[in-house]
Length: 202
Ligand code: SAH
Image 1 (cartoon, rainbow, N blue to C red):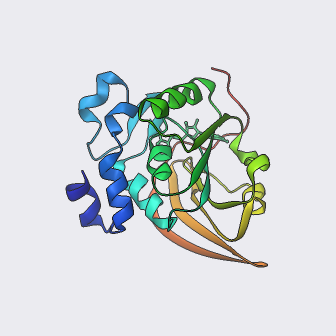
Image 2 (cartoon, helix red, strand yellow):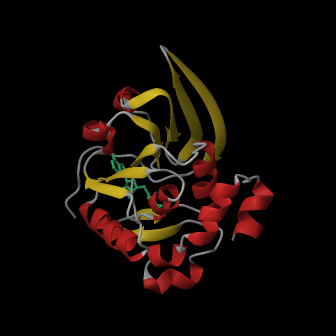
């Protein structure tokens, strides 16, 4: 996966490549799909949601430019795979999922894969996670438009990374908070499941 899907497409941060080669992706997908876990695509994880393609997980992780001591907020835990990769790249990951059954499954997956520096919450990520703000980085793994709260919960110098757009046509956007200024950069076109408001008790 690393040699065929990530390196040729420009993922070159050695810490990201190491994390991608260590985290057992097959433990995060349904056992019936585990033989497809390392293929070059997203896969269903239940409740109409998906685990992102390996390249997208790696690319987003690289764009956060983590050095190891950061506190990162993730919106959209899903099955917890991106969470697990991030947890190897920073000090602590705080992750929020709006669908209760996925939140519970991610908790089990992360426990099985022995990731201890992760805190999970079932809630609406549009509200961020006030209690633990400010964060060094915020990553959103569902597509839509940014909530103002995210920038407020970012420390000065921190970065927000999210897929912006609607109807499954998104573009990766990185916004850096620099004093009163916000510096925006745009990256790959991509397709994510939609960012939705509120909590779903399924
Ligand atoms: N990073 C995940 C990708 C999961 S798909 C992985 O590696 O598996 C995106 C997830 O975002 C879905 O589970 C969806 O339910 C969740 N989501 C969408 N809107 C949300 C919101 N407002 N708050 C929290 N989670 C949200």
